[in-house]
Length: 246
Image (cartoon, rainbow, N blue to C red):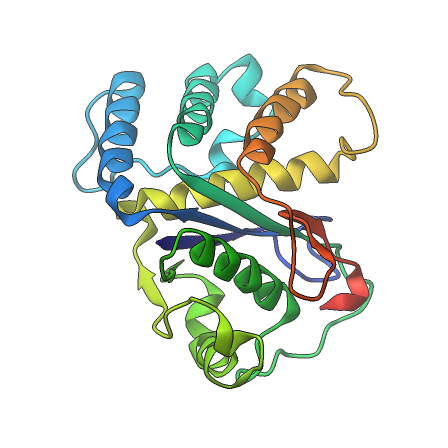
């Protein structure tokens, strides 16, 4: 099983994003080839042949905004088709929805895995166990995870919970432009971030962009998994983290 992870938004007191999201998309390896082919066909049908020197990448920052409703409708079509495609696969989605901190956070220790990653890995391990598989962690090579490979391995090798997870102790760092799984994780994380930043978990949508966000979020939520952990409490698939829990 492959676990594609990406983050939408920065965790910083001065960041414009108020609800940064870290998301993992779990997918069986034997389905990745079909997903790659189908996403390629979707992009080619909507936008035409790719530029071989600069192939089109699915990124939430380009697709998930009000202009996709009014002017750049091709972007909306691409996002819709990709998100609607995903439930046809054997996938599970987990996301940590965070709060923008009020203070400057101390620099994270390269040896210690932050809570948001630990919470996600626990959920990834649960799905891997349910599928009788092992999870290979896949990150964008330009993401900050590349700087914390030691913390990931320390958690999986030394932490009481991490040692029991069905997660391989060898994170993989890839180019997102040629890895659709990472691109889809980025898209989903962006959708969830906008959904919570507009407080759509607490109120009804009021305009077309918000209605579109709710439609996309509903599809993503249907692919998430809530379960009772070994401590007897519930692990929510899409969970909110308080600003004091970093």
